[in-house]
Length: 220
Ligand SMILES: Cc1ncc(COP(=O)(O)O)c(C=O)c1O
Image 1: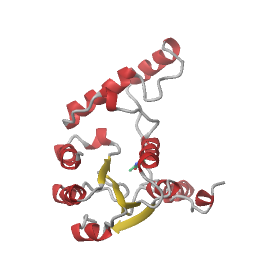
Image 2 (image 1 turned 90 degrees about the vertical axis):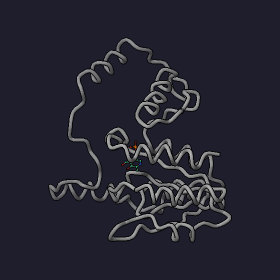
Image 3 (image 1 turned 180 degrees about the vertical axis):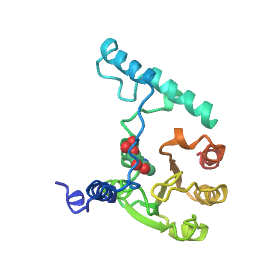
């Protein structure tokens, strides 16, 4: 096994889920949905399995699905994406892995806001990158502009975070996103705001506005 992964400790998500099962506790560590799916979705999935094509899909995803994704982001987030620019993956972790492996070169530094989703650091290291952690400190766990700026070096290639933040469970406000975008705009960084669970979280409009604004501010 690759020594990097061999030496990696068991993820905190795995530890907490096992502990929750063992002690019969409510599991706040991992977001297992405890609700069902709408019948129309189950029916459509069943129809697709029995009647649809079971051949390989194009590796970037079916054109109709990529168009539906672009439409979703236009409708819900005001983002002007073309289907041509969409790549469909099996979950967020695959997308993160593809993005990190495609953009991070050995020796590049990547800033992550700690505590962070646990796939970020191993993926950056697997790409040969160096992880720079910027702490989100109690009691407010805010992104501090100065701390972020202090972590930037000529080797910094990216800042990776998610909003709403896992594992903190808070939504970064416009000032905090401004701090990240301003830094990215004033350096050669690319700013990558990964969103997870956005269908649930974007009903309040502040996160959608922030995302759109972030894209404008950091576009190159
Ligand atoms: C921030 C974040 N990114 C990615 C993931 C994993 O997503 P997926 O299961 O779609 O790979 C999670 C899961 O909890 C997450 O919280």
